[in-house]
Length: 291
Figure 1: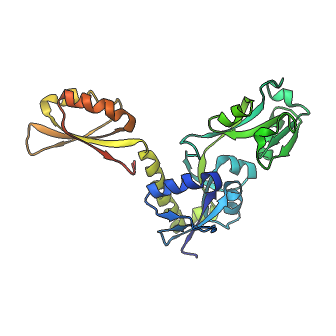
Figure 2: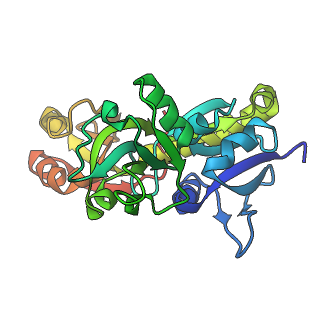
Figure 3: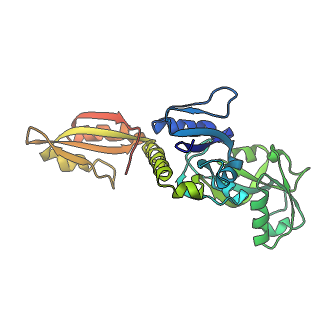
């Protein structure tokens, strides 16, 4: 096992999103039924499924060399780990999640000061207590095992809950008062593993491929042939800040243009490129973009 990197993968809501990202990065990963040890087609990796809430603790104590977990759970557990990369993805979207203070729509609570002496239900007890202390507020913060949205107003005056879109809160007649923390997924490592040259190189390579796969999401490549006389007009149709590759062709009157653009703009840009003089236009998928 000394030659194998012990990698923790988040179980639960992030599991499928993580597996999808690894597959796009070039790793074949499968989850055997009733097993917490996913298989991966890399003999230098040994995967273990761990709840994101516990990942920081197991990486910090060396049970795992590295793992993926949310910044929120690192803060909540006060885990002493080395953050190697931020990977912005979640169970619903490719954007950060928010821990918010929410109350019933008809609640008089409008800000932190109104929480004095109130009961708050949440899964992030430590984050909530530190936030309250920062505002000079004393409240009864209770750990919630789940279904936190249904607790106000009978079982709690307010909740601190994670959200991406706010739809679940609205469905339970709750409104957001304010944000406590914004969180993204982080690739974290045990300090000793991060300092080990072989393990660090393996982790850096893995992060490079994961970030490359994320960078390629929503992007496609376009290549086309353009007469030099039409080149300025064709390039003007491409999005600003893009730097296409221009290569000479056997026919000196023509060049090849290759660029990367957002997939949702292709249907608008291709007709414009054609009208500007481009020909032989080819759209192709991208799996990774490595800077």
